[in-house]
Every structure is written in structure tokens, then in C-alpha cells.
Length: 260
Image (cartoon, rainbow, N blue to C red; front, side):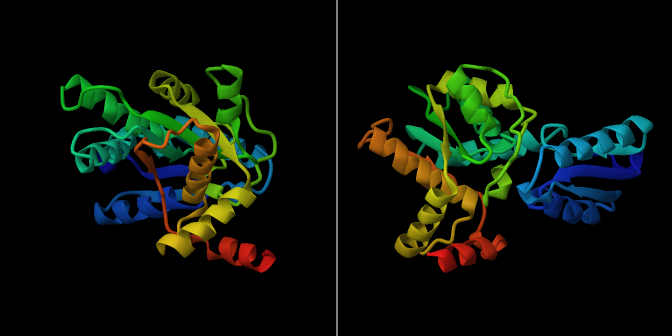
């Protein structure tokens, strides 16, 4: 990004990876300031997200600002695409049968789909493509609702409420891209309750020694549900993506342990 053309950079965020990574990269290249707008960790209405978006849009229109929000910046999908490429490489260029992806804004799943599509066109992989599964929390599941209704765009989720803050996005900008990718792959969208994902987080720590984040644990809970329903077959090779460490929000696991 030619930082000399910009004076400020903004992004709306839940206060997690996106706005934590941007300042590091901007400082490294002597870039502009970052103004972050927290979306209250998914604790309330659609309002804060819409307000942050409106503030940023107005600043960009006035000049001197660049919107680095999800799917509004030029290169983030290319970065997320490496998830799909690394999966293909690690599977010996024989794709898994199912890829389960925690989905908020959807850029991860979109990037994976792009990697799979391009690898197929380049002749790097052959045969059936993986079925893509978008996993959301039941307390904020606009993509799941649209998928179940056969719709290509989502309607905003009125009151997001989940401990998996990273997937608590009430109106993903790239909703149609996610839903198209699911449809092309023969995949599905699944919503899991907070109690399910917290149980999966605990089981993963106990059995694998891995402290998954709530979003990653949501994917594990979805795998269990899809396996029980027969959608995932015994011989299927399944990848469930864990998008962060649970150490990012230990209060969630601590509260769950106390409640248990």
C-alpha cells in the first residue's frame, strides 16, 4: 500500500486479530495512524457496527483515509488464500473431503475457496473439491439462516449474542461470496450453541492438549453434529480450522469452568 498517499487508516473491529495486526505492519513501514472502532465484543445491537461503518465511510469520502475493514482492503483475501494452499500442500495435493471454517465476516472461507478454485484451474489438484462448511454461533447466525432459506444475501441479525466474538458479525459484507462458495462445493452452514462450543473447547483441551479459541471450538462442535447426522461419513478426511488460541480470552473458559 503506498502509505505516502494516506494520512490515516481505519477499520471497524471486534478488537481481535485485525486491529492487532494492522498497527504492527504500519509501524514497520512507517505508515499512517490507525483509528479502531470497537463493536462492543458482540454484546449488543447491530447499531454499533452500522455506526462505525458510517463514521468510516464519511471519513474516507472526505479524503485522506483508507478503509481497511474486511473485504474493503485490496489484498487480505490473497493472504487468507494461503490457508487453502497450505492445506493442499500438507495433504499431498489430494484435497480433504470437508473443510470446516468458523465464519464471521467470511474472508477466511472465501480465501480458501479461491485457493481451491485456482489450484484446480492450474491442474495442481484433480477430482472432487472439498465440501466447505461455514460455522456460526446460534446467537449470531445470519449466514446459516440465509443458507437454510436458500437465499443469496443475509438479513442483519438483530441482537448478536455469543462468547465467540470473532464470528459475531450480524451482516457480513461478503455474504453472497460465502453462500456461493458453500453452494458450489456441496457444503453447508451450521450454527452451534455456546454451550456446545464451550464443551468442545474443554474436550479439545482435555484430549489433545490444545486450548482452542471459542470460534475454533465452534468448528469442532459442528463436526460432532455433522458426524452424528451422517453428513460427515466415517471415511471422510475432515479439517476443522482453529483460528486462534483460547489464551486471547481466558475469561470465557474460566467462566465456563466456574459454571460447570
